[in-house]
Amino acid sequence: MTHKITGDLVQADSFFVDGDWKPARADALDVIDPGLGTAFSRIGSAEPAEVDQAVAAARRAFDDGRWTGLSGQDRSLLIWRLADLIETNVEQLAHLESRDVGMPLAQARAMIGEAVKMYRYYAGLADKVYGESIEIGSSALRFQGYTRKEPVGVAALITSWNAPMVGLGMKLPAALAAGCCVVIKPSEEASLSTLALAALATEAGIPGGVVNVVTGVGTTTGDALVKHPEVDLVSFTGSIPVGKQIAQSALGNLKKVTLELGGKSAMIVMPDADLDAAIPALSLAVFWNAGQICTAGTRLLVHRSVAEQVAQGIAEHGRALKIGYGLDDGNDLGPLISQRQLDRVEGYVHSGREDGARVLSGGERLGEQGYYYAPTVLADVTPAMKVVSEEIFGPVLGVMAFDTVDEAVRVANNTEYGLAGSVWSGDAATAHSIARRLRTGKVGINVHRAGGVQMPIGGYKESGWGRECGPEGLQEYLETKSVIQPLIG
Ligand code: NAD
Picture 1 (cartoon, rainbow, N blue to C red):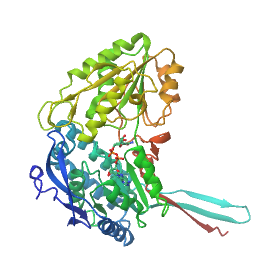
Picture 2 (cartoon, rainbow, N blue to C red):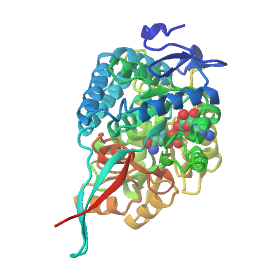
Picture 3 (cartoon, protein in one colour):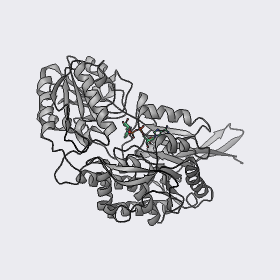
Picture 4 (cartoon, protein in one colour):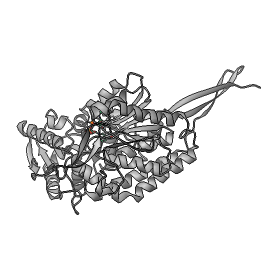
């Protein structure tokens, strides 16, 4: 069965290994359309032996030099061609993504557009991988040294479901630009666009075996990949508990690990902020993609003098957002990804209510079909409440009033997360001073949802290890080798 909606971009019940589709041996998993709550396709669930085959294909491709042996310029051209093919197929990919994840079609298109920029950015860096020249030794005995940057080897790329094309765009082109060969394990909740992309990589001329995809559940397929002795690096995006397991699982051969994990980002609003501009931006910072964004601004710290005004403004903006099926025109938000995620969001809001939160908007499931949840604003919350201290990954904002900047910064930093944050103020000195004090990998000033592939992203504290995007994102896939020779004369 192929997915009718996409022509034959994806072959169901199959993995993409060694440049071709490989039918899965055993049980397939249903692919659920979260807007309808019904299955519309199937994906394979790779057993350890099938993971072995994919890793062996990547290993062969790495060791025989079919990718590393190409010049940086040639790799660059092929990655660029892949970007072109993603762009050419944007409609099919966006339909696939919208159905698989639930996001509105226009948003899926925009995200694929962002992903294209990521492939082009790293295509541009592929021929700029170089080390340094260093003279060492004493006056009597001098040496010429230089460093070489070499690909780490076989990289396992494990992604989450909330933004598959952008999440993969932060990993795959950087890995390819560095010269790595990869096995990708997308989330079992949203694998289709990743499978399609692997087929496009082959169409672009990237040799078979360089980009492989296995699908399946984390505890079987993902686990086999992370523990595999022939994998040299794991680049993981997902939750903190799974990130910790992955760090343990990687110990066997001490493979390198980068972790892009969860967040509970604070948005600090000062009384001198331009509130008319801030309120809609704050609302979208938490509700966009139904709140399923790792950097979502889920804790609002607002100066007491404007707290009620800002909280009510966000609640009103949230109520006006159009929520519905991703493939229907004009919707701002789609459903949550799954029944499990809907139950999780309902559970957190219930706990907030029990703990004394005041529900300003939302707080309920929408409709009977699909997994829709209303944008929710909870006022009168405190840092100790679960709804404020734990990542929900849904459209739920907790509002806390503060009196002093020190208090705002203390509460913002009083969390194990450290992914992102934002400061809203009309005074540049105040805003930059607060930005410096926030213990997070990213801070926006009078903006929350902004960024580009040029800016590195990653977590302080338990939000992760390493960085993606920017030149740092490339370095994660490189080893440094020192070469030294005596200088004669
Ligand atoms: P998850 O941790 O449940 O799963 C992520 C991936 O890991 C999936 O592909 C899953 O199959 C796999 N996996 C699960 N258990 C595994 C195991 N034992 N070994 C190997 N692989 C395993 O996360 P999720 O529900 O898919 O995504 C939501 C989480 O991702 C949130 O916490 C969110 O904040 C985080 N996230 C972070 C970023 C970032 O850049 N920091 C971006 C997007 C999402």
